[in-house]
Length: 443
View: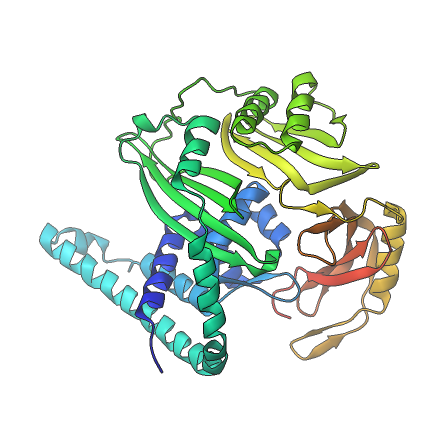
């Protein structure tokens, strides 16, 4: 068996870079306690969905998604949590005696302690890796040529740093001259099989000066800008970002300015209608529509969101959208999903009430296994019932169809700590696509 030291280096690098961000550490701790759905994590963390998506993508191999759509830790993720726990367990009752040691001995002790923690975590990873490699060696050998071909395809395509720089300087308007310590920390690429082979490249920057430091991530899909995410690095004073031009803290004006600047560097026709709608919009309390573009604003204090989504025949496709997030009146996230998705159908033949009825009927014959116990009998409450309309792909990876998600709540927690069922129903045909469990710890 041949070990891949480069792969190990990348694994450890991923582990340590993930532990640096407090949100990712919290996600790892949460998933160490129990598996969770995307919406459950979103509610627990109280952050925008685009930020949670960004953090999950950056956790990479530390987090897995099971067939029920719930997230859990991989062996590397468990090792990361073990390392965190080791680093956080400081002996009590000895602090006063330790504080009397000379500084040199404290430093030596700290290095020794860190070495023990790293050695323990690396040993855990190596043990888990050996088991995994033993079980999957034949498969990896068979897939080697295919992976090599994919890597060559990735390396042959890459949006230039110039395009990333244009987004940062001309669209977001960050004054990089005021951040002399700015560096490109990484530039990675991968083929997203879950998106039908979309090639995704991620630029990660550190933007810093003597007063503040920010993490900035730009993601491109098939050479097209997809997402910008800005976060302040932990431990630095909250100095505001410095821009080349004054930025509006009003969500409507900020979105209007941003889309106009984005349109100047991108010639997609959907941006013309988006800019036209923003030009005539003056209301923040109601949704507004122009052609196939609908504008929806959400304002909550210093934080706000704007979504320009595709709409047709009264059907809104939120997945096909332009999404702007302001936190403390600063643009922290900008996502363009519009170019990526197609619309397969706009026909909604199943109403919300009909979707609820279909979900209840489907749940009557549903069962699940929890630690060897087959659960076939349970009581569904008449209220509350949560219903969300969110079109997503059916037959193809990037073609959207109308879709209902009905969440039914149970009268108590059943084996597996299950207290709710989520039923996915195609709104054009009424067919039940999936039933997933909610609230479980182990199933």
